[in-house]
Image (cartoon, rainbow, N blue to C red):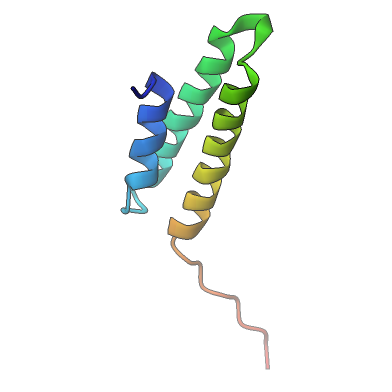
Length: 77
């Protein structure tokens, strides 16, 4: 059963519209951060820590892939 933070991560990773992506990624990151805070000083166990870290990596990668490409500045001739 998915936990609260995984629902936000899955929503962001499924988003194909680059205009909607930043908001969903921010929500997912906040949910991951909230999970860390819920655990207090103990932090998540090793398995969950790996899941949280992997989720953050996936969000970063998805954001880079879906970000609209910016035009390259042309060098003066």
